[in-house]
Amino acid sequence: MDSIKRKVYSELFLAPSVVLPIVAGITAGMLSWALGGSGYLTGGAVIGILGGIGWMLTRIIFRVEAITEEAMGLEQQQRIDSENSQLDTLAQQLARDQDHRTQDYLTLLRSWREEFLQAAAQPGVQLRSMRIREQVDLVFAAAVDQLRQSFRLWELSQSLNGESRKKVLGDREQVLAEIAATVERLQTTVSQFKELIRNDRKSDLASMREELDATMRVARRTEERMREIENSTTTNESFTRE
Image (cartoon, rainbow, N blue to C red):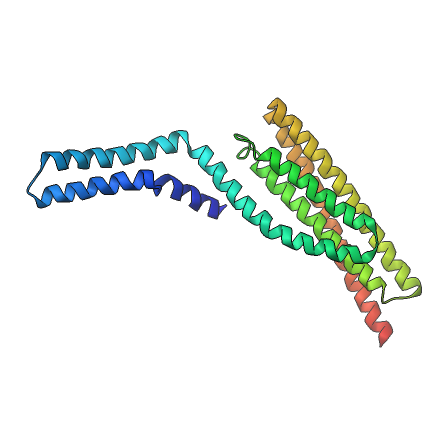
């Protein structure tokens, strides 16, 4: 958010259409003073300075929302471009577990998130959907992390035998079930969000935020359980080897 604020402030107060008239006005004023007073230069100075300030105030009053949305969209696109390369790498890793579900889940997560972002990028929607977009990003990141955990469990299972292997694969199935549920909830969220935007039902956005909060609480509990499972499995594996 700080970077977005900086971009908005820069666009409002430091845009060439604002700065150049003011600088020209100040320059004209200084020349007028140096020449002992010139009506033309003094008038130009007043027009330039007041014109620049007036245009700045006009942009603050009438353009601040549009400028903010443009800044948000630019930062979001930069972040997504960087993130996509990491997701492509994850997709290549998941292909190794020979389980089509993990690749399908990742594809669906990316698809639903992209559909949501397109809906949230509509003019006049970005600012009021900012909180929901942050929550969707958190849910998406949690689900992607669960996919990474499922892959780590699969890798671990390849080094085990017997009951230990069955237990790890059983834990992995629980993670995959959680991911499947998250994908379904994300799909429902996107459909509901698009419907709310289409009908301009702003009041229902609060209930959607509560649902996403509940989804995040489930994801966090899953992450905590996965850390416990991984720590426990790693400890048992080390003990067995010793």
